[in-house]
Image (cartoon, rainbow, N blue to C red; front, side, top):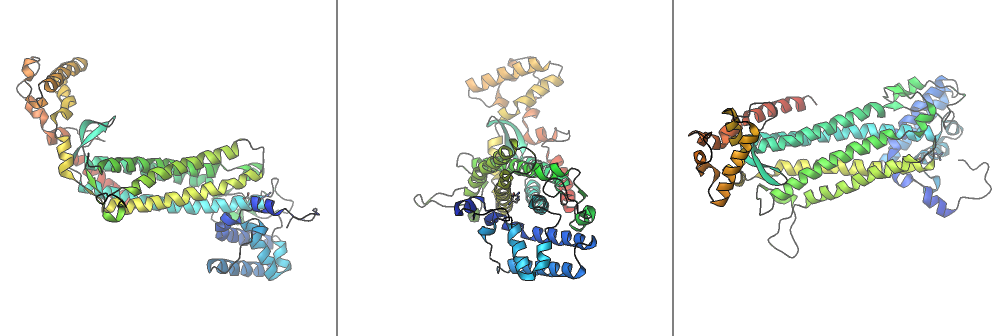
Length: 453
Ligand code: ARG
């Protein structure tokens, strides 16, 4: 399709090296929709007769059906999806097909197709994110009032509710959805009409084409429109960060499923056994999510590095945008779906969680707050509680049974109140705290929000 000035055939190694149809074939519905919109604008500009436009529209619609039915042969000799479809169209309808590429380049065509592809992927991903959020909200509801230790440095810190822990992930996933929806605003702009880099002397109605394809606007600078892959980098970033969140969730679940923690149990359907050790039940899904996140982050490095040294406008390096993009989208979609299913079916061992949170030591901070309420400056209170902790450790006595008044006159006879777990949680009445009532408020809020999506 570009052989006019060449006297030699392309080396077969070069064909093998440069073909993209083996992966960009999946752009086909967008390529066809873009071509039909482009052809309609050509008809309206008098470049195509009504008859030629119908031939193109029908020809492309038939090709779409054939691809969908698996009756289309993609040829690597035709490089990419764009030339595969156009060449087949011309083969089928003749002269009119050869007019389709008027006032268009594969450069604005590929940017159009990938933007449409990204838009669809964003909508799919946001839906999957909402499904996972809902499953986590349901878990939070089930365990709204169940206590467990909260950790810093993977050391028991303070008691929290299991529901509060699950809702932390609902927040992360919400930011992931918001990031994708924000990226959508920049994705959904039509580059068609930018041509190879400098537009065309044949002026088609760019806004009409954009409207037909559901774009919100048209790009303002043809050179930027051709060179821009920010929208792909943004998507891969948003996907990577979501992967990082799922990876952290996986790590929590892996720990919880150890015999050492034994806080949670995954369903058999979401675990695997060992071919050697008959007793094993392994959290492979969590490990795969954690492992695959490495690849998502790698894809982000790949796209950023591919773009960084490129002079304006199109360079063939840009063809390298698609494999990391497709891989990231596919990987996250599956990760979200499998995590949704797995978390819906998992159970928490409330007895074990409560046991782990039962050590009165976890309320040492509350004891310091008690002293503060008696007028002791916090730094001094911290030191007085530290002394009590030291006695508890040295004498192997639970903190609530240490003779506190012997350590300081600030300790009254009422310190026993402090070591009541449920009272301690209920005392946290500020927004954002693990108080079971507040967790339930959040659960209701999320259910309302998610029902609107
Ligand atoms: N397959 C190419 C890509 O993905 C399409 C654009 C080709 N443009 C060009 N000037 N060779 O980037």
